[in-house]
Length: 257
Ligand SMILES: C[S@@+](CC[C@H](N)C(=O)[O-])C[C@H]1O[C@@H](n2cnc3c(N)ncnc32)[C@H](O)[C@@H]1O
Image (cartoon, rainbow, N blue to C red; front, side, top):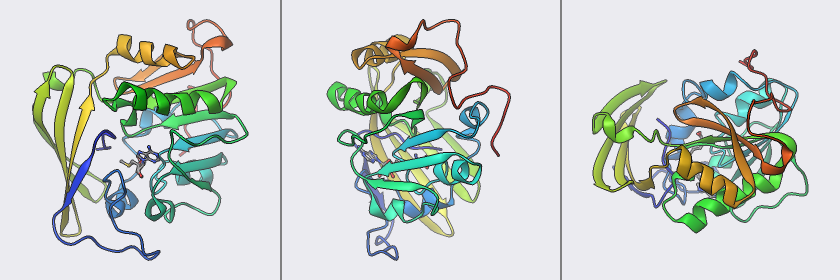
């Protein structure tokens, strides 16, 4: 399972490892690097992979160790990955251009056909920080381009408070710990090669209306829903929201992998 990006605190179950570049094994936002190097792109990114069509310029915001960026680069996309963690960026393929920066602060002098903000970073509870992430997406998407947001299922609380899955070689246990209206405290426990990491987070559940408000605040508009957790948006000035037109770099018929 991908991680929620808000207010994360990590408790490694044991002393943190040190990666080859000397950076700790846990990112500033609390993500375990070894786990994100091991997680496969699918099924988490499947809805996105089904609509992307090379060649296209892709900006992956919060790219981590590159499970999406590396796959897309191998399939002919020109990929730029942004992340605040040097330890994560070490995992990116040579073909991926890397930018070590905070998403909120990065401003590249170019626009992209596809901008991705995955891993539920948009569920940040603080509205200013949330919109700052979206503003970066808006600042980098081409007029006819697409922004893809991965967010928590707004109906998450209708499901069981605890769920487990095995994703590739990673065992994942997700638990809701506390609920305050639309804000949740949760915990994800990862198991890999006999090691475990427990990551806590606070996230705000956002329904379509709430997402639309945040998008509008930064000059974006929703275009189509790919799944309960993947939303495609675009520049508000680039035309009507419906009917959805395939944007540059996207095609509902092809799959890059
Ligand atoms: C849960 S990991 C997911 C990585 C990747 N998107 C994936 O799905 O494999 C979240 C990543 O976002 C990065 N991140 C979180 N907040 C960030 C921010 N404000 N600016 C830059 N990177 C950020 C973290 O360093 C981490 O690598």
